[in-house]
Image (cartoon, rainbow over all chains, first blue to last red; front, top):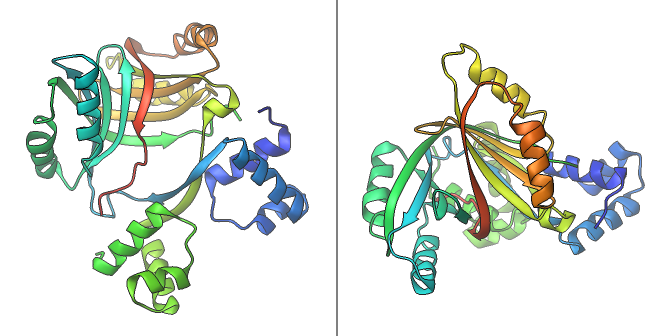
Length: 150
Length: 151
């Protein structure tokens, strides 16, 4: 779908804070409450607003370490990809799994309480996954999300 | 420190951030006032930061997503700061992360198609300061992306 300036302003506001009421958002944008609501509804129906996500401070919630892993599969074939994806997706510490093209086959985002806990997850859960070959780990130091081209 | 009830509340909110206090109270066997108090305390402690919407860029016509893994030339003293400041000015960059490891910085980049990606890569990314090396990983499929914590 194509966006106009008001749609873009609504998206920018909700990406920053989705807890605000439609009434407050409408007042900020100089729109009526029903007009704002209709626009949000339309953005949801078009699939542009994919969902709402809780924001937690991972470190303060007890997860001090986030690691990105590049994983290369040792054996390939349709079955091994499916087995790997099913198994890795079921690990609670694995927050995201992306199938990628390039130096690695998969990119994983993993959280742990500390480095010792990460080592446990890596050894017991990740290195034992079906088909895992080379693994590269990078420990996250800082992260920022940008609004993107809206 | 979080106790079991706090963690249960956060687990429920991770699934649906829109759940109200009365509904949450029923789920954890408490009262709406107590639940509100717990959520307020977690906000004050900086554990609970709020919620945000996630945008599906494909629905807006951005079909290509690439992860750029960048190694910086650390001989320049302000390499990190100058690189990050310049990367923030590229509109198609939706995430910036810094790392301890073989890779220094990762940028998540979106583009409308491969021609658009090539344009952004040549005109904007390769112009960023202090780059020593870049590797690109192209997203083929996202298998899991909830990013919830195993509380």
